[in-house]
Length: 76
Image 1 (tube, rainbow, N blue to C red):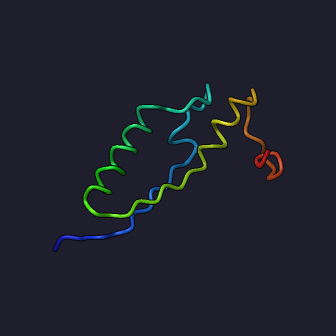
Image 2: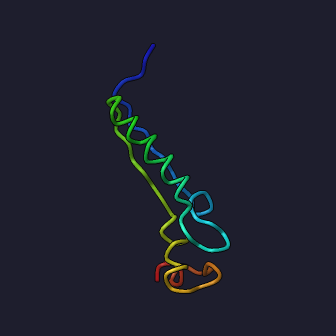
């Protein structure tokens, strides 16, 4: 039985897509995810990407070494 027209949710955590030392995005992982999402779309599926990775990348942009522990700091 083939599944068609599914909605596939891909959750990307910061630790999966951002280097923990440099806080730079891991482009090889992101490329693989985009290729997979594109393949799913071509097969007729809906794809939803959910990511907390923006926090990790934002830390690098703000020159912050450690992730804040409290919500207001994370939201900045």
